[in-house]
Image (cartoon, rainbow, N blue to C red):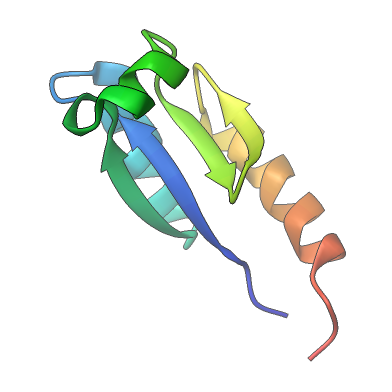
Length: 84
């Protein structure tokens, strides 16, 4: 079973965003970082609420994305994944 590719909405200079990326990488998540300040629509949608981890339009988590929280999320996503 493979994890889906997620989107991590971030902002330059955001310590929580940097920490989230460190944990996502360590836990072998597949994700694409997107700077919310690069697009006015994203900035309006997320405001100061970064980091935000999403799968398509589904927001999976936001705020402090610690290792334990992401580990739990990984298990949930693996359970939801279609069998290969």
